[in-house]
Image (cartoon, rainbow, N blue to C red; front, top):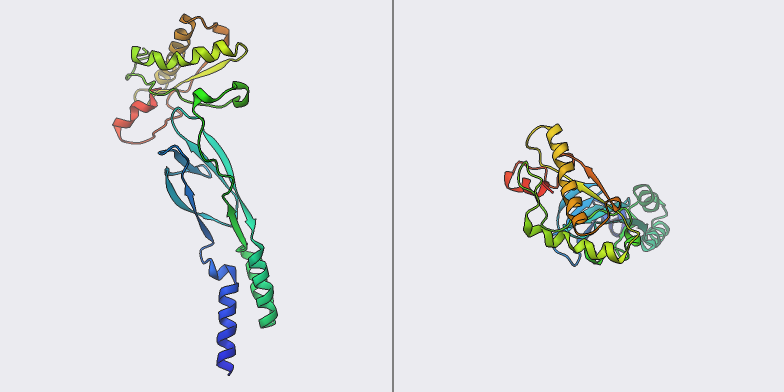
Length: 243
């Protein structure tokens, strides 16, 4: 009889104690926005491209960023919230075994918590649909397929049509201003890279001015090689940093 009581007590403890039931205190989260191949960052760390699943710590909130070329990046928070069903289990278990052991254990480890994934964005906004611009102030985006040859700031003619998409936005919203950011890869010394990145931004500005956009509506900034998209040893990826 004593063995049955002990076994029953252990079974209740095992299935009511969230700390034991959840083991590593993680929850599997599915990152799958409508746009495939989004870069996914969790708490500032890159974890891969969507769609993907990843285990997150349930005891704290997490900052998530989706980023994809030509789309506005989206940063959001997944909150850690208490699930009261585990509290109820702990209370009943405590009454049965005459001990608040499971209650105190789960409270200490925050094993009651679960991640609220209900507010994760379903998709990203393409920069052409980011209207009106006043709703997207201080938001960075990259015009698709606008890259430069090594050590060059000349814009290939095939890229003009993508830059020209900005003109209709300028014309429709006469009060907006834009900041154009130029970048380089890590080849060469940093002084030259800084200068080159400025010239790349200026080249885009010059093209827009040639289409009738006033110079005072365009600010240019160069970042050199300090903000690479790919900080990798694969030379084939470096062209994406020359933007």
